[in-house]
Each structure stands twice: as structure tokens, then as C-alpha cells.
Image (cartoon, rainbow, N blue to C red; front, top):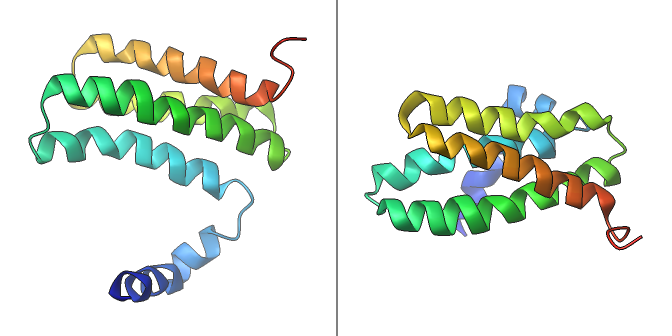
Length: 122
């Protein structure tokens, strides 16, 4: 119950409320989550193997596929595909190993799969 009240208070802040009215905000929120999660994992001491295995490979791939589907659903231009991989790569440059930049390419590919929807086999 308190979490719901906290969420409502956050969403009631005027700049956030105004931003949430924009059509592309779900993509921006998901992209920010993908960029911030690695820092949260390292802050809580999650081992690197779990961070790369669970977060980078599984969770972020699912989120990037979902973002691709959102781009189609919201009828946004295709350049929105670049937001998530670019934000992720910028976050990786700050603190993490350079090999993690390859995940930006992987997320871009999963977004394209999300764009293709049910046309993968056609």
C-alpha cells in the first residue's frame, strides 16, 4: 500500500507528470532502467557472473525486445531503436569493462526482433 502511495507521489511531481504525457516516455523509462540496473547490481555487491548472466543477457534482452514492440505499438520513428543501446553503452563506458559494449549491439538486434513482431519467419 505504501509503495502505491509513493508511486503516486512521484508521478504527481509536475515535471514527471508533464514528461509522462509524451508518447515516447515508456521507451525512455525502460532505457533508463537498463542503464541504471548495472550500477544498482554493483552497489549491492551482485557477483559479475550473475550481473552479466542474469541482468545483461536475460533481463535486458527481454526489455530490449519489449522496447522494439513498443516502438511499433506507439508508431514511433525507427531512430528510437538507438536510445536504449546508446544509453546502455554510455553507462558501460563510465565504470564497467569495455567488452560489455557488445551488449549494446545485442540489445539493438533484440529491438529489431521486437519490431518484426510475427514476421520473423516470413
